[in-house]
Length: 311
Image (cartoon, rainbow, N blue to C red):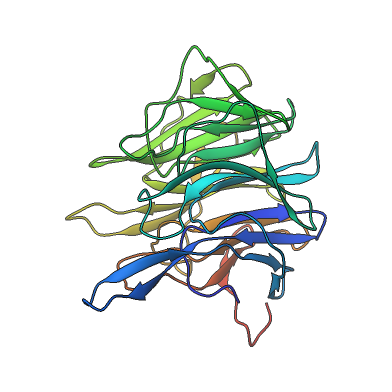
């Protein structure tokens, strides 16, 4: 198994008929009794039954990068992140890599977004480009929108943009032809607003916001034809909470269950097309070491995967 880690990225890889996991951060104890974050640069494959490490070289070690599968060019696109040591944003990256199912290739575009972590990213199927919004820089957050056309990053100039935020996530909604952005955080504030990108500009959706707010992790579930979000709420002097919600293009529905992952941030999430399940891995809460758990969502229930059981 990949082992305990937070900030790994998960993307479904049709070439391998499974979910690719890359990177993440775990902690090691220092001599003074504190812990240090150490990022990883390993690549793993989830086949619906077990994890297998792929013996490939690739991007330098990092955590909380952005990644999405480009179905027009049949590659996973990975950008940025933080690493290799220290807790992000101690060190930030802005390199671009692609995964073709066999190996990683570094790209060298003419234009490059600023270094960042925890931006929203999704592949816009209708327009054939990767879309990336916002994220966290060394000293502040971003409100910029970029697209990747397979060879270069292009800075967009939308008439309207969402407010700056960290820990937001995106997923493409093919039923409506838009990329969906939900939630995130600002200092002292946990957000629960919803925005959609139509290839030209951002539009805030007027539907009543869900109770869930804060750190969001989105993926599209074609089995129920909705965007599924695992949301972590954490704020000083408030009890932590975790939610599962689903977006049908008009409104959010609460899908939270009693037996679901405990509240945690920096999870990896992807939809496994072979098993028709949402897969969530890792994450962190108020503990010395991140989680090393694999959870699967089957449209209405969560299950904790056990290595002994195999699924």
